[in-house]
Length: 185
Image 1: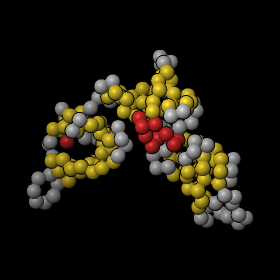
Image 2: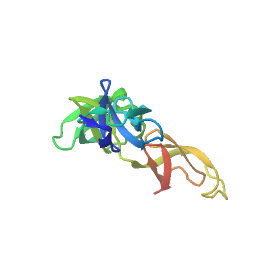
Image 3: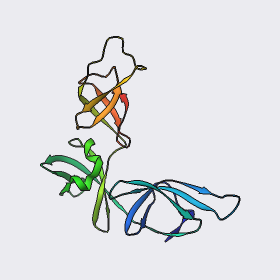
Image 4: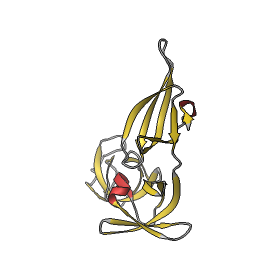
C-alpha cells in the first residue's frame, strides 16, 4: 500500500481490479477545503486514458508489473509472434492483447511485454521508430518544410501526417505515442 504522497510518473497502481499507470499527477491545495491529487491514468490492458482525483493521503494499492524485453519476429494471420530475449522462448499474442500499438510493429523491433500476476497486459514500444514511407502523394516543386502537410503510409501500415517535401522511399522518425512525424532520417 502507498499513499498519494508516493505518486510519481510511471507508477503502476491497481484500482477496481484493473492495472493503471500514472501518466501525470498534480497535487492541489485549494484555499478552502482539503488537498487533493489530480491524475491522468492509462489502463495498461486497454490503453484508455482518463482523469481521476484522489483525496490527499488516500491509500492506493501498488501493482507490481513485470516488464520483459522481447523481439517482434513476424505476423502470422491474426497472431503476432515474439521471442523472449533471455530465454529465446517464442510467444504468440493476439491483436486485442497488443492494442493500437500494432500499427507500429516492424520485424525485429525490440519491445517490452508487460505482465501482471502472470497475465500479459500488452506491449510497450520504444518512444520512436524509424520507418520507410511506402506511399504518399508526390511533393510539388517549391514545397518547403514550412509549407503544408500530407498523409503518408509507412512500412508498418500506419498513416502519419508528414511535411510536403517527404517522398516515397524516404526514411522518417515517428513518435509511437502520438503517431506524429518527428524528422527525416
